[in-house]
Image 1 (cartoon, rainbow, N blue to C red):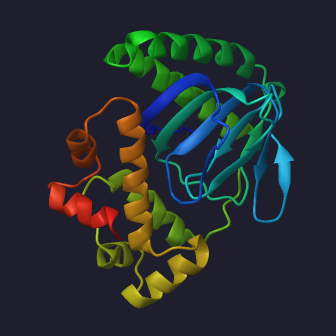
Image 2 (cartoon, rainbow, N blue to C red):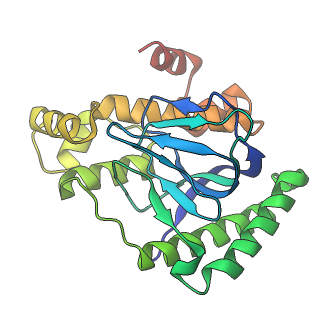
Length: 242
């Protein structure tokens, strides 16, 4: 399985903030390699510990709520990104270095490249390309070993994939419905039933999430807004008010 990362919005190693959550979806995919600490991920039905030495892939449609021990916060290597493979799951996808012999040496290379990237190399396109390439290699390998079944029908998955590849372009609900070969009303009802929000909200939330990640990585508001497809302040601020 070959995965292509279409945008890397953040990468690094850090201690997680104590109040760490987002109730909105979607946001970029997140891959966390847990190094230590005591933190629990909450889903609608259960709560489980994020174990040191394991990796967790959080789908973009999954709201992110973490409960942490204030005296032992989560230490982790992280990547926030978009990719051309759509994954929808009610829980994060767990990987272990023991799943495949190539994962441990690949992880060491990933840690080293991210450390250099965070130490002033984030503007170096060659280094960023290395970080992305290693991330793609891991995802392709890990998802081949531990494939994740999606819970959505093919038409909705295709629409989500289209959104994640083209969110910086002009996208209308009518266009998405046509892409899925469904009537607009039927498409909206089916999308909301499967994902929990309307297609318009999905596009807007994804764009806002990417804007937030880009601002944290040092981009200006103008640069971030233009990157996700807003051509004017008026369009951007209208979107933030909805």
